[in-house]
Image (cartoon, rainbow, N blue to C red; front, side, top):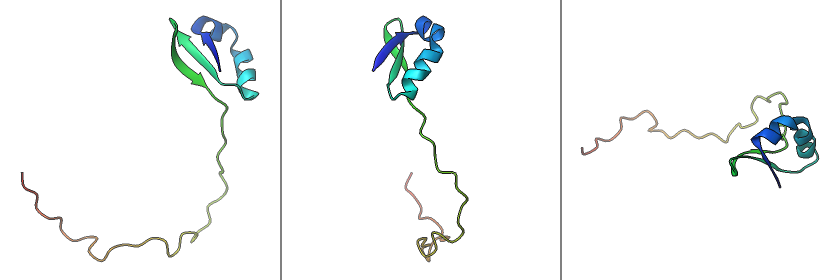
Length: 73
């Protein structure tokens, strides 16, 4: 983990991105106190959804739409 102040981070931003891309964690500090952390982006799986993949896994109770009990106030 490397700590940079705000001025250095603004000046050497592309260098910091290279460090993060190589797996290093970078912390940006203001007045010596950490305020932000740069981490590599972890991409998500955006593959098309498959209909029916959760079939049989969803269960709705028979009293789902029954009135709620009264609460003491």
